[in-house]
Structures are given as C-alpha cells and as structure tokens.
Length: 429
Image (cartoon, rainbow, N blue to C red; front, side, top):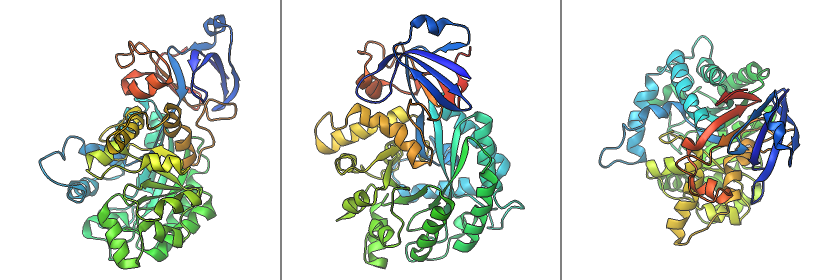
C-alpha cells in the first residue's frame, strides 16, 4: 500500500479539489479523501506531490518507430504520400533488437512528459522480405518488453495490413513485412499474442485494421469479428487524406466511414483515428454507433493532413481522445490545446472547447479507447497520475486554475509520474 498527498487534484469538473489523500494498492486507487489535514502529507510513508495532481495522460495512438523521423522530413514541398517513402525505409531497417531499443527511448520520452498509457499501433510484424521471425510475434513482444522496461502502461494494437490500396491490390515490396498474407493468418498470430499477454498487469491487447486502404472490405468483417471474439478494443485509421475518400467512393461507391458501417466495424469499442475529412452523413453514423474518434493534431499538422471537425464531434456526442501518432511531438498537453487552437483557426472564434472536456480527452477517454477501466482519480481506477508544477515557466503568473493548466502546461511542467502505483518519474518517498 502507498499513500500520496496533494494540495490540489483534478477529480473531474471545472475546478480542482483541495487537500487530497490518495491510497493505492496492487496498482489501483483504493481510497480517496478530500479535505485531508495537510499534516498527513508530511507523515512517514506518505509521498507529498507538489503542484496539481492530474490523471495520467494517454496517447491513444502512437507509432514509436516514426519518432526516428523527427526533424528529417521537413524539406520544402512534399505531402503525406511523399512522407511515406522515408517511413518505409526506416521500417525496413528494424529488427526486434533495434525496435526494442528505439521503443525504450520513445516510451521513456513519453513517461517523462506525463504519458502513463500508450496505444501502440503496431504493423511492422515480420522480416523485411515478409517471412515471419521464429517467434511470429517477436516485433510486438519487443514493444511489450520496452514498455515494461520503462514502466509505461501499454495497449499493443496489432494491426492487420493486407493490401496496398482500397481496391485490394497486393502489398508493395516496402509493405511486405507488414502483412500476414491473409486475414486468417493474422487472426491465428494475434490469438497466440493474446495468450502471451494475458498475464501482464500493465499490458493488454488491442486489434486494428490499418485502414480501408490496407484491409479489403471482406477482411474488415473478419478483423472486427476477431476483436469482438477476443474482447479487445478495435482501431483503424480513417479519412486521414481526401485521396482515401475518393478511392473508396470509386471502388465501393461510399465513403470510408460508410464502408466501415456496412462491414460491422463501428461500435462503442471502436476508435477511428484521424477522421479528418468526413463527408455527407459520416458524422451522424459515427455518433449513432458510439465509436470514439482519436485526434492527433500535431501529427495532422506536421503531415499537412488538415483540421478535423472536433467541435462537431463534441456537439454530436462523439467521444474524442488524443494521440501523439508519428511522435514528431510527444506532449499530450500540446495535443489537447491544439484541438482548441485548430478550431479557433477553423471557426474564427475563441473558447470553442471546455477545458475539462479537453482534459477528459487527454485522460479517461483515451483509457476507454485502449480497453482500460479507469483514467480518472477515483476509487477502483488504475493508479496512474501525474503532478504538474504551478511554478514551471509555462504556468508561472497564471491564475493556477484548470483553464490555466489546459491552455498553458506542457511536458516541461510535469514533475512526477505514477503508473500502477509505482513512482517512476520524480521525487520518491
């Protein structure tokens, strides 16, 4: 059992709760007391956390290996499609050992920035020529080992990748290592992976179809069925680029979201990543299905994807979460505030999103997207929380309230990180 004290903590709503004593045991919050005597925080066995305590931040969509492209793709010109060329080159040079070492660095950067849970969207499955490793899940297990080394909570989202375009054309040479060859082979491999991960307390399995470009329509049905059979969350990239919409319309006579609806892919356990360029009745279908949308605004800006309809999602009751995606930026505070900033630019007004709504997107909705039960400071939730210093350069001089934190905090404001009751960043004892 551990106990933690903070003069201020966010437990939901528009303001902070004062003098909070948190008790954790076996990785979960077992007791919360507000209005506790401050002398309790100085007692032996109680860790005093300065500043404001928040639920741990969540990056619900990450490609760890993309981090190695940071600062290397910013020449004049280019677009998302051109960016894929150096990405494929990078992917082609990975092996389980290199993947592990790179992921340790990336996940380490995440936890130091306040990210306690990451959804790693994993599709680099096999050897560069497409042949499986002796252990067909060696690459995924390298990511698991990296997460455990660092101490971050992980949902390993194993993605089916079976085609190179919406019309079902075979994968290209650069994509061979992404593909299992058939949806049945993919299912067999992920069933083995599910068995392997069952005993891990801070690692769970998610499943995905890479996109409507990467998985043919008939296989989308099978991927969705596999996720439901294994009781995992289900993710997919969708409508990140207008060209995907055009190709889907030409091939299937409908938008990507409509195709997902027709294949039974949408639902409360489904997360649609990006959903930047929705058309026609897409929004109403997403809302009716209960699906979550994961916005990745710093990556969407970095790749020139566009600005998604975040305000419309919120108005329609669509839950939103956040992802660092390409990890060109690893700062979920910046992701949250970018949602507001992008909508200010798009809509020409300020104060589009409620600060508590943005912090919920950065925490508990991300946990739900990744198949975890918690994401907030409440009894029974995972014991994942962070401390933010109000004396940081980012927050110095602000009123010190919730809007200040959401609008001004960055990764540099984070002083302490606790995952599953373990104090992995900051002062101990």
